[in-house]
Each structure stands twice: as structure tokens, then as C-alpha cells.
View 1: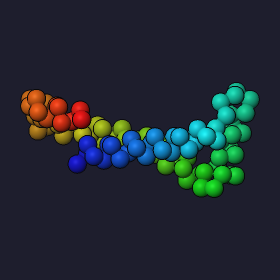
View 2 (view 1 turned 120 degrees about the vertical axis):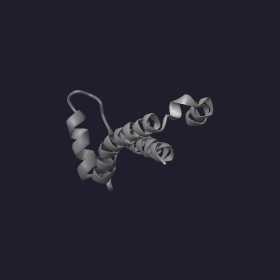
View 3 (view 1 turned 90 degrees about the horizontal axis):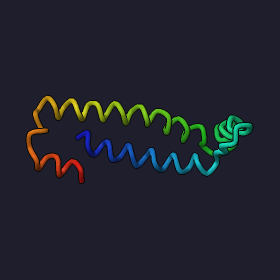
Length: 87
């Protein structure tokens, strides 16, 4: 089920994003250095960064497949399906 997979992927993106935000500096002169710091000095920072980067692409793949399946099966015709999908 792509809906639950999307929820799991979104939760993963939020958690890894919060972890990366704790170590990231957005100043224009130190932004690249903070990314290097995350990858080199933070424990498993390289893994968290790669999970976050690839998770964004995986999220869009899943959402496109979820929409395509809904269009193929005609799920957009049923009001109950929309209500459950929003929740």
C-alpha cells in the first residue's frame, strides 16, 4: 500500500531532517563546511545525509505511483476514498 509507505517515508524525512538541522549552519560562508562536518565528524552523519537525500526521491516515486494507481482504478470517483486518504 503506497499510502502507508508514503507516511513512513515522510516520517523518515522529518526525523533525518531534524537531525541534519541540528548540525547544519546556514551562513553563506560556513554552509559547505557544515555539510562536510556532518559527513566526516558526526557519527553516521554520512548515512543520515544519504538517507535524507535519497528519501526525497523515493517519496516522489511513491507519490506518483500512488496517484497513478488511483487514476487507473478510478478511486477518485468515491468520496469515502478521498476522506480516508486525507486522514
